[in-house]
Image (cartoon, rainbow, N blue to C red; front, side):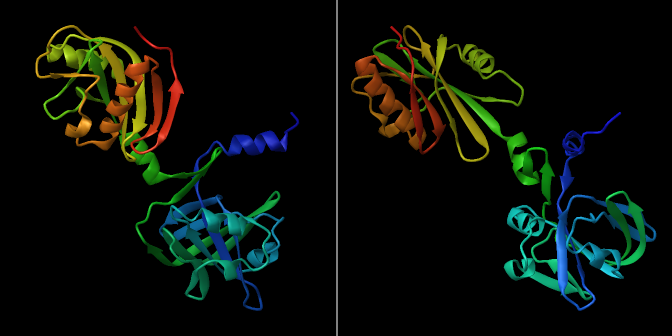
Length: 296
């Protein structure tokens, strides 16, 4: 079987990794380094790790002959440092913050750092496997920077996305009046991850004995980094338990202490006048209103 190196590289990239900068000094004491995701712990007793410098590196011989080397696990937000040491820039250390530990240069602001004494060097194709025994390490307890086939990713952002909540609301009207809570808010229910916002909202309204025929989505917007709000339009008839009816033409939105809801109600009042309704997509402060077909 003939191996296509481009396809093989893509296949290897499916393995999500952290990002490190591997460093050492030349025989004349000049610091050199490169970005690597070929890093692994090897042993706890004795403490050992490995990295894999490629023979394409301008500093390859310095690493092959080094008696010591360092590894900086980059922290979230250090993408610029990663790109710098992956580039062909001449003086990389002049363009980033770094410090010495046991004579080895380590990147400042790192998630963790290691200084190693070279234990063995193993030739492996177009790379070498550089195995070192850890003589010094530090741990800043910062989230590490990740890398995968789609580029960099952030642990904390991924966790926030996983934990992101959804709220589903209904903008309920009977053609002449809109129905809001005593606080001037839309009837709203929380939606758990994996649940259908529409189904959860329908069930929540039934539980409150609110009769509503839900139709189109009227707005989708992010409330900060941790919550998405989906607002459906709904049609009803007559007074509803726990809700107050307000005339749409003279709708007073000042009761709503949420600026996003206040803006949504202002827009609804204006669109009701022309019977030309749109779909808002954005966040709680700014976004776009996309044209949508009106409703009788």
